[in-house]
Image 1 (tube, rainbow, N blue to C red):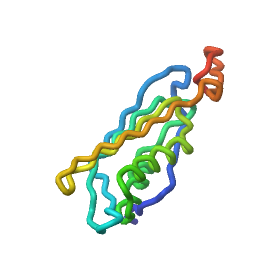
Image 2 (cartoon, rainbow, N blue to C red):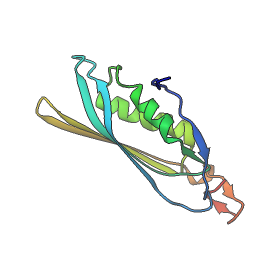
Image 3 (cartoon, rainbow, N blue to C red):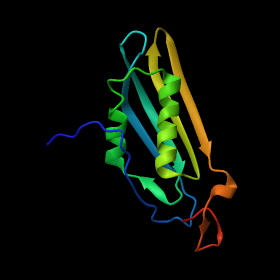
Length: 134
């Protein structure tokens, strides 16, 4: 059975929650529709995050990004929605989502949205007894 687009993001436990490390994901085949013209917009979505207790499962991320293919969305909105949905699913220590959209009408758009967990909201890591782990 072929895969279908989905707004569901699946996760798995971070194998090294006691350590800060960055996960970088580049998704060069992102598409959505211009909400004004209905024409396709093409972008590379770059996701950088420092996980806490959870990491994103990559196939679910692919299907999630695919779900925007037939949606009208301004570049600024879609980039921030992706960040918001990933933050809700993963509760990362830090995350940056960049939407690098191809030229349209002679204008190249790059939108960067960032999130950092407030220090007081980070769980205490039993291995270190310090903020940042699960």
